[in-house]
Amino acid sequence: MGKIQTSKVLDGLARSQALRVIEDVYRREKNWIQATDSEIPVHIDPEGPYSWFLATVNGQPAGVLRLFYDPPLELPAEFQVSLHQDVDLKKMAQQGRFVEIGRFMIRPEYRKNMLVAIRLMGIAVQEVVGRNYTHFITDVFQGEPHSPLQFHTRILGFEIIGSHLHGELNCSLTRIILTLDILKAYQRLREKKNRLYWTLTEGIRGALDQKLAA
Image 1: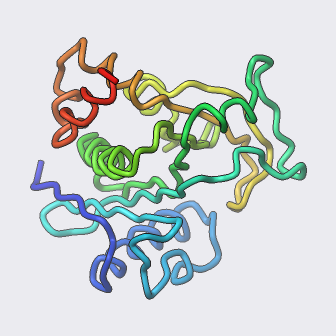
Image 2: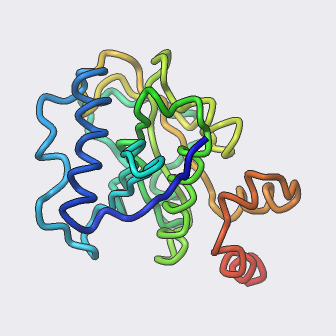
C-alpha cells in the first residue's frame, strides 16, 4: 500500500510536487487546462483565499486538492446553472460558511488506493474546521470515468443540489453541484465508528464534538 502522507502546500518543493500531479492529470490525461505553472502561485499566501494540499505515497506525489474560501455561491449566467427546486442560494449563504473543493485529483497509479483521497479530504476537513467553516461545495463532471461523484455522495455524504453546463475547465460534460454540511456528516460517521470515521476525523474529533454540543 505504501506510506501515505498529506501536507499543506507552503514551499517550493511541495509546490513542484503538486504541479507534477496537476500536469499529469489535468493537462496531459484530461486536457482540461492549457498550462500548469499558473495553477499554484510561486509565492503562497497561507492566509490567502486558496489552500492547496498534497498527498504523497512513499514520497512520490500522488494527489492534490484545492480549497477556495468564501466562494460566491451564485455562478455566472453563462454557466447555465439549474438548481433543484428547494435550493435557495441566498439562504444557504446566510446560514453557513462555505469552502469550495476544486482541483481534486489522484494520479492514475494511485487511484485504486482510496486512502489517498480520504487522507486528502481529512487534511482539508482539519483546515476548514480550524477556520470555523461549516460547509463544503463542489462540482464534479457527470459521466467522467474518474469522477469522484460516487466517492463524494456514497462515502462522504455530499448532497446534489443542481448542475451547470459550463465552467472554467475545458470539458463539455455537465457539472454536478454538491454540498456537504460538515457537522451533519460527522454525526453520521460518529454513529458508524468505522474506519472512515477514524481516518477522516483524526485530530479534530474533539473540536467537532464541541461544535455539536454547542
